[in-house]
Image 1 (cartoon, rainbow, N blue to C red):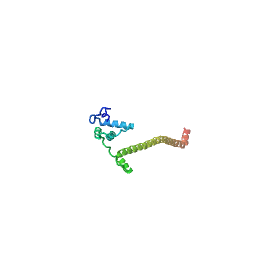
Image 2 (image 1 turned 90 degrees about the vertical axis):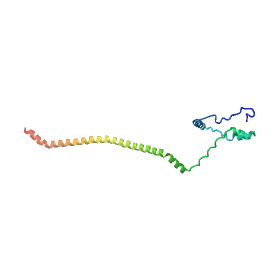
Image 3 (image 1 turned 60 degrees about the vertical axis):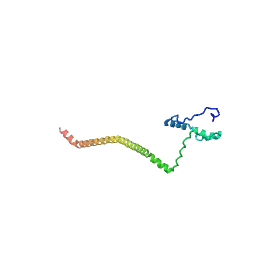
Image 4 (image 1 turned 180 degrees about the vertical axis):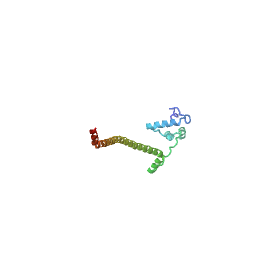
Length: 161
């Protein structure tokens, strides 16, 4: 348009002359999405410019390639269908999470039992020591009673000598 009036150089069609990898295109698209920038659709620019300038529509349309139409959005799923889809897609992750949780609970129970046994071990050591002391004192008292029963006989034997 501007080139026909002599106000700007003509724009050449660059379709097929530049090559971009899919990674470069996706990176650029992610950067634009992250920045919140949406690119305009140039599909109908040729028609709009032709109407404005009352020029031949076919020349303008031929110089600007049309974009592919966007796919129609998928039909919305019900809550139950979404739940079923979630469970179907994440079953292995959920099972693994349950395994980890059960393992953690079992380790906790084991540590509690071990701590109880360690506390009980101290108690049993003290109990054994006290029991041995009782047994030794009983034997000592028994021996002392035997000596006291034989004391009169021992005194008479020692007085005769």
